[in-house]
Image (cartoon, rainbow, N blue to C red; front, side):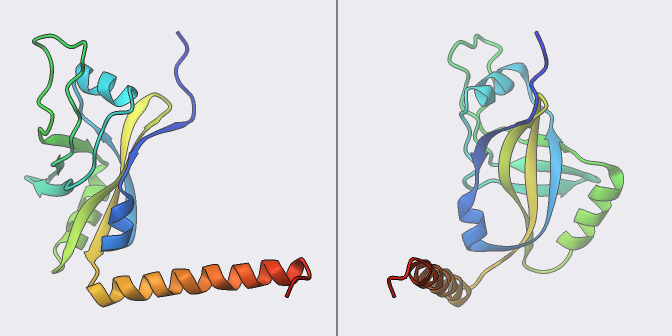
Length: 158
């Protein structure tokens, strides 16, 4: 059977872009068991409440929910187990240097398959205050209104 090509999105964490200011992104592989991979291929996963954490020079993903595989047997996995992330040593050093700052955390942004391998996109994030969120919403609404006006003007309606 030929290997998958391209990128197939499994889950995305859109709320992370609302709650955090993302400064950098990294792509990491995940150490998974067989039933976890099968459950991900079925498109089942949740990144709510998930975060990355450093331990002994390695980075782990906590709180990611991959439901048990329905056709799995006694070999099924624990849905919220801690999963090791696969990054190059220099990337780990960069991430750990950025995580030393106050208020900075590692947030998973999406889980996908890239050429058959399960990957997670991580973002180095700083929490937003409520007024930052309101400002972002106001900017988005203003851009939308400007685009509407430009479209009406281009069509000769206003």
